[in-house]
Image (cartoon, rainbow, N blue to C red; front, side, top):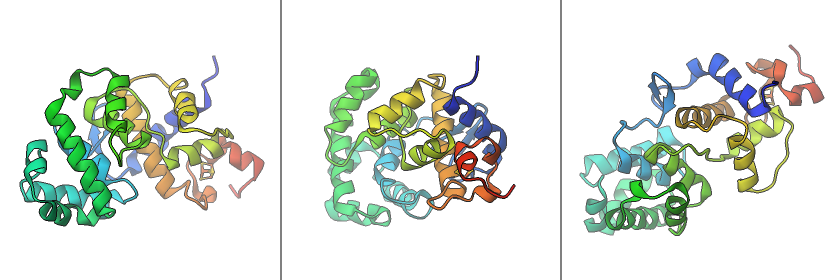
Length: 231
Ligand code: SF4
């Protein structure tokens, strides 16, 4: 059976691009790529997913996460007890301070009141989406990296690369997610690795103005079949 376009893309990125993924951005495991925080650092990953929205991880969000740790406020009960001024100071490097502060506070309260790890995927996602400042991509990022659920967060990079590489045009977040998830194995390591690869590839090669002439997968890309580049 012929491989689907997303699964072919996944394989190509693993084979040709994985070695270029910065190891300070993603943690290498024996099975692929994971969030940079340690395996059991659930709250750190949740805070990271909230703080990285509309921000760069290396220069902004990771500094805010580090500040929370240095200031001793990287656990839910400490967040809800911390003064807003201290929290604001800690997360300032991530930008959108007021919005992210409220989301961090609300998700901490939720974690103190509900055993999120016991919820099924649907209920967990609904609980997270009820928080102002947490949208579909952030909630799926939390499901995947903090709770090891096999879902794909649909980032702007994922859409951009798939649009070009597979010549597919979809509208809603849910349509994109269904398309990707139905065409790759529903395996948590694959979902984590694919999301990481798409993010980094979208930052390095398939940028707004794509660098097709130096792209590692241009020979299989439908975009370059429509608009040929020098090989
Ligand atoms: S060849 Fe160009 S459009 Fe296709 S994946 Fe590479 S950078 Fe993106």
